[in-house]
Image (cartoon, rainbow, N blue to C red; front, side, top):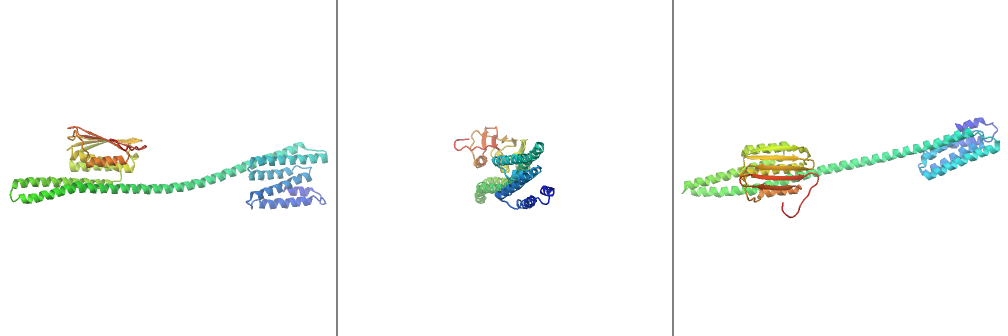
Length: 383
C-alpha cells in the first residue's frame, strides 16, 4: 500500500515509477516466500532484500519519511527471526547508519531536513524492534512450553508404566508371601498334627492290645488318645484360621475376626488397644502383624495356659510398635520353639526388631518395632 501511495504521487513520465512497481512486486513475492521456506539463511536473505527495497524508497523519494514505516515492518520480521543479540546490535547499527545516510542525502540535495518528522518515523522503527523482540520471546516461550508439555506427557506415560509394573510387582510379592505362608502352615501341620496323629495311631494300637488284659490301663491309653486327637484338632483349626485371615480385605477387621475366632475356640479373652492410623501400614507388613498376633495368642494358650491377652498397637508416621502380653504361667528360662523362631524370622524379614521376656507366674511379653521410613538389618550378634 505504501509503495502504491508513492506510485500515485509520481508524474506519469517519472522513470522512478518502475522502481515502485518492482518494489511492490518484490514485497508481495517475499511475503509469500518467507512463510514457505524453513531455511533460516533463506529467510534472512529475503529480509535483506526487503530492507534494500525499503531504503531505496528513502534515497529516491527524499521529501517523505514514509519509507521508515516499511523499514519498521522489516525490523519486526528481522527481530522475530534472529535471536543472536550481537547480530541484532549489528543490524540495528546498519539501520541507523542507512537512516543517517538518507537524511544526509536529503539535506545536501534539497538543503532542507524535517528533524521532527524523521525522529518520529525512526521511533516507529525502534518500537517495531521492541515488538519483534517480544514476539520472538513469546514464540520461544510457546515452543518451550510445547516441548515441556511433550516431555511431561512422556514422563507421565513412563510413570504410569512404572506404576503398573510396581503394582504388578507388589501383587507378585504379596502372592509370593501368601504362598510362603501357606507352605509354612503346611510344614507346621506336618510337624505338629502329623506327629500327634502318629502318636495317636501308636496309642490306639496299644489300647487294642491292652483291652484284652488290663481295662484300667486301656482307659488311660484312651484318655491319651483323646488328648492327642483334641490337640491335633486344635492345630488344624489354628491352621485353617490362618488361611482364612489371608482372605480378609481390611487390616482391622482381620485382627478383630482373629481375636473373636480365637476366643470362640480357646476361650482366651483379648483386648486390642489401637493408637494412630493403621492405614499407614503397608499391606505386606499388615500380614506379618496378623501372623505375629496369631502366633502370640497360640503360644499364650498352648504353652502358658493363659486366659487373657492384651495387645497394644501404636501406628506412628515413622514406625509401628506392638506390645503383646498375657497372664499365663510364664517361665524363667525361655527356650525358643518353632513358633517363636518363625515369628523372629518374619519380623527380621520386614526389618523389624523383636524382644521378649517372661517370669514364673508373670506371663509372657513380646515387644516388636517395625520401621516404616528407615529399615535396619543387623547381621551377627544377639537380639
